Amino acid sequence: MIGEIVAAFRQGDVVPYLGPGITGLPGEASPPSLPEKLVQELVAGATTPHKIRNNLTAASQYIENFKHRKTLTCLMAKAYTNECPPSAFHQWIAAQEQLPLIVHAWYDDLVVKAFAARKDWGLVQGVTQSEHFGDWVNWFRPDGSVVSTKEFIRDGSGAKAPAEAPEETLAWRTLVYEPLGSVWPASNFIVSDSDYVEVLTEIDIQTPIPDSVQTIRKGRSFLFLGCRFANQLERSFARQIMKRSSDRHWAVIDGALTKNEEKFLREQNIERIDASLAEFAAALIESDLAAAAE
Image 1 (tube, helix red, strand yellow):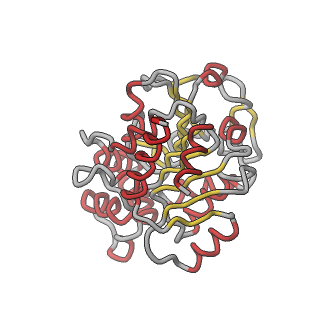
Image 2 (tube, one colour):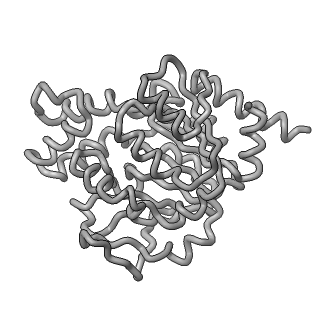
């Protein structure tokens, strides 16, 4: 199976979907790589009711409601502002110039750090209606500067979505899509209950998903790394982002699956690879090097 996946990478036929687990690959210096770890960082900086202290979206919503959105944004930025270098796997992913799309569904900056040596890529991030009313995404160049969008279509809610990707983004060799936002370059975070409600209300009709992403994913297989599908939020985002893609996908998940995860994998035709993320990542890199030497 590794050989098949490496071949798909080399042909540009796979879309890596990088979840929270990928953030933990650098080791102890890594920023929070699980929702359970992140929520502890947030509640350490702002008092929240005991019953929601282990619920990331609910705790975030409480902080936003009673401490102001800026407090939530600052706490999130603090949790993910560090000097942790990207892992060998992050570096390997960034070196795959034939990949047109990478989905990074977490809040750290390790992926973009790994891309620092390249100039032929760009970034599109989900943004909140509370801070960017009317916009679903922002586009950024490799230096972090914003790409302006001028032509819009308004949906029924009054929010606007780009009629098409800004022209200069079409020349990017690789598009990094961060549906939940990220600490870099502008601390955009989709993390509270209301953030998710706004996106999920429209995601079934694909409005929050950039048109470039919708175009590139067609006919391609997704490889889910560092992801779990135990809750509805995780499943909904994955399902809608991979919509109208290939009918063959993979997910590296170590250990027992929940019933909901089993059902989701079966429904989406995702082949489960029962292996530790670190071991799989190392095997993928080794197999790619071996293929290159042949």
